[in-house]
Image 1 (cartoon, rainbow, N blue to C red):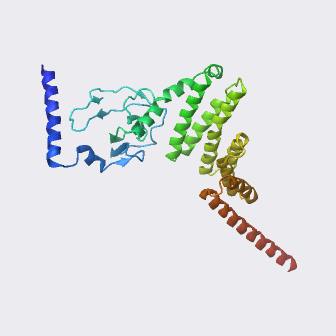
Image 2: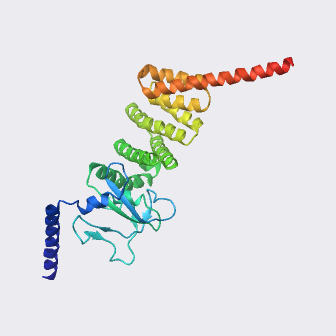
Image 3: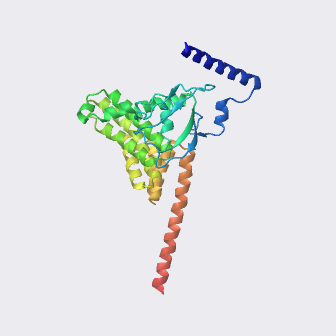
Length: 312
């Protein structure tokens, strides 16, 4: 009976709070919180306010964490889920044990000792991101298999696993965690490379799946200022699709960084033939031409000085 009375009183508090809101036309509690919070995903899906900063790097994707948390619905003063009644909360494995959509992404922004408040909106971005994160356990299970065991699963499962791996790599890249992104992309290429194909169709599907990994690796290596490696991966992409404009563009970028202007121009002209009105391609071609001219001018000046010294 006492529990029932407590439930009734909670409902009454909720109704009275809503009535007050309607009467005053003021902003809701969550709306007030939103004004002082930062946007984690860039789409208002997860908002964050740091109450007490922590130390060290953010929580990595594969981590196991121990954390206290409480979840509240708007206008409710009682949590629908909490660990504060536990002296020692249980350890949670990211990708497996966290069931509240959006909380896992929030945890991955936190540092040791940090105390933060999150506002989780039930939008498609949070649900989609959480769905991808919840697949991390499936990825871990697949990676834990031996190469022989991995070759016994259907190709569709392998492709699903590597797509999840690539999505994590993309998230790391978008967060400027380029080394983490590179590791994810290389993990995907290794899983695909271990596959012993049984037919030409399967070989084609593996190559098709490898292409975006090579393109992403090339771009990531450019961000890490390693043009030689960027060129290596863009060439691998061109081995699969010789007319791929992204691969040609990445090669042009890498050659430019290596000051190989003829090669850069060749790749970019080939890309321009496929996409003549692409702004990025045309802008980079102009940059290559300018750098090439500056290089030739410097060479002429250098040779001119050498000849003057010889004459002297």
